[in-house]
Image 1 (tube, helix red, strand yellow):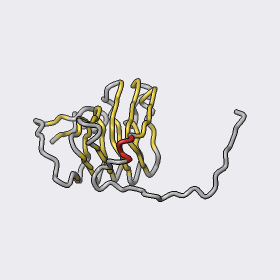
Image 2 (tube, rainbow, N blue to C red; image 1 turned 45 degrees about the vertical axis):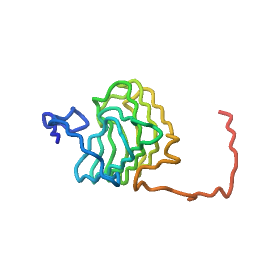
Image 3 (tube, one colour; image 1 turned 180 degrees about the horizontal axis):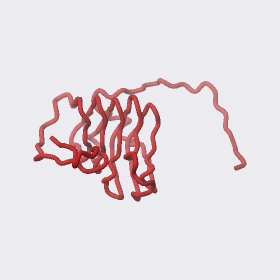
Length: 171
């Protein structure tokens, strides 16, 4: 359980948290929260976290076994990268933001962090921007082709190319 640090929003100042307790994942691999969820750490297993609020990424995420683990994050509201993340941030996840956007903390200085390396997939309602990072590397995680997070929406054969035209610009 965490609380705001000095009353500041969770993405502005690192929250004050009680002792960490590790709990096994539910058998079905899905967890639901009504409140904002802080995200960081190593995932061991296939997991989907859903919040009726927002996610705040506060540090790197990784997979204990990249060929066996996945992380799905579904937010009703938004997904924010906190101002206090390390200057070089690497994180893995499949992300869906239903009503808003994914972005860096509002008010964070453009280019105040060096590099963001994202591995995963992202679907948002209103786009987004990671302007806090000078360099942004968006990479699809090929493991997601065969190992989706539990209960994560999958679009199978949803698109058909009916017309293709190549555009060449002189710019």
